[in-house]
Length: 32
Image 1 (cartoon, rainbow, N blue to C red):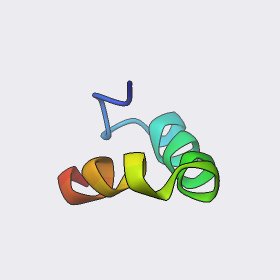
Image 2 (image 1 turned 90 degrees about the vertical axis):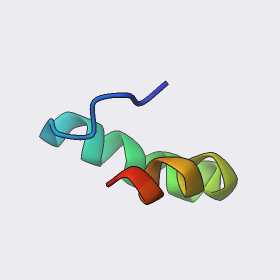
Image 3 (image 1 turned 60 degrees about the vertical axis):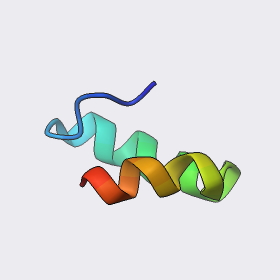
């Protein structure tokens, strides 16, 4: 879902997702 982790909006989405789905953010966090 979050493919562009360069935009600030994605960072916010990742922060919220991490609170809702830490497992899904795990893959996104590895990219950031």
